[in-house]
Amino acid sequence: MHELGITRNIVAIVSEAANGRRVTRVTLQVGKLSGVMSEAIAFCFETVAEGTALDGASLEILEIEGRARCKSCGAEFAAPTLFAPCPCGSLLTERLQGEELNIKSMELMEAA
Image (cartoon, rainbow, N blue to C red; front, top):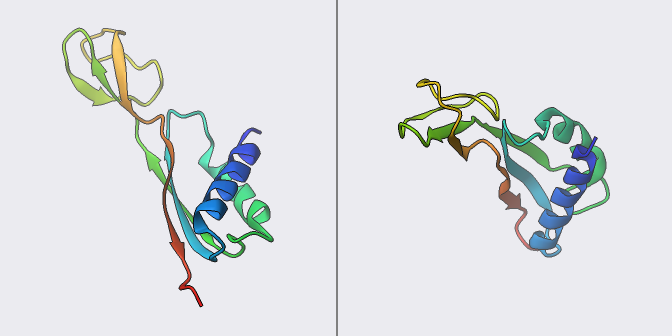
């Protein structure tokens, strides 16, 4: 389960960016084609955040649908899998979105 390691990295990155302030909310973008299980990150988050600046923070995960562009006909289309063909039948495609794993935002408590 590489999501545990990913969650540890997310907590470390956000903790560093918070610069000693308490984090109340974290929003992630996770592409459906990224190979990362959003549910596993959500499952690990509370335990990994314990004792850090993110302790008690809420986690919001925005799942990004896969999209691709056909290199043969130029059409853009929904890509539910990594190797989804274009509606024209071509397999020569370029993925446009769906592979993201981003920390979109974090909310901090006011400094005392």
